[in-house]
Length: 87
Image (cartoon, rainbow, N blue to C red):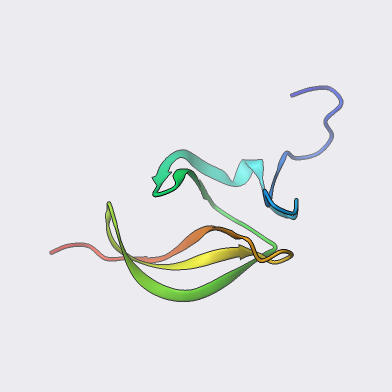
């Protein structure tokens, strides 16, 4: 880290710059979404959840909610609510 940086590194909305989490909240950078690379976070802020819905993903059926920037409304990704295991 450069000497001139003070405080935590932040992740922002790519459209408006609204802060959505600290860099330390990233758990993994190896997820692959349908539109490219995806990150998994422990905590986010300044976001709004859409309605919950079940979706079929590569890893099975999951209940998800889309996550939007609270400032500009841009779709940022989704939040896992529940995972279903196949019997």
